[in-house]
Image (cartoon, rainbow, N blue to C red; front, side, top):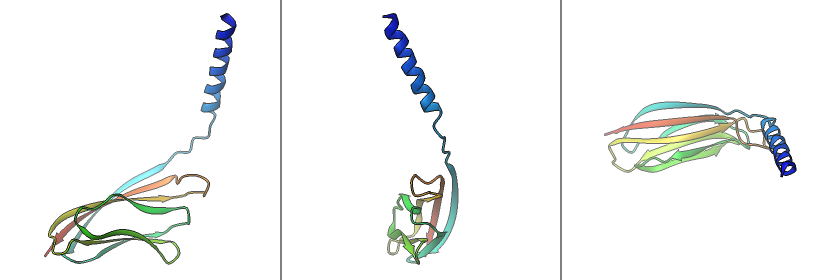
Length: 123
């Protein structure tokens, strides 16, 4: 019994040391809110700039009143978000976008930017 306890303690110690010695890859995260006023049926575009092959932008929370709400990669790396409200819609809408950068290709991105775009749509 004493021998089993010693072995179990040894194994738990090794596991604890192994886990605590792993490289800690911290994530740099920021959040930005943009307020935009557009006319009903007008198209708005937000240019995120250039991204590498393993990086990109995605929609985290989709807008509610849209005819078009999408992210596209254009010109070999530029990421553009495009929004057009539902036809003749007047009111407010909101979309949340997640931009991920600094991927080394072997792991996840370590720089994440959340962009919230709040639309005010008028006649």
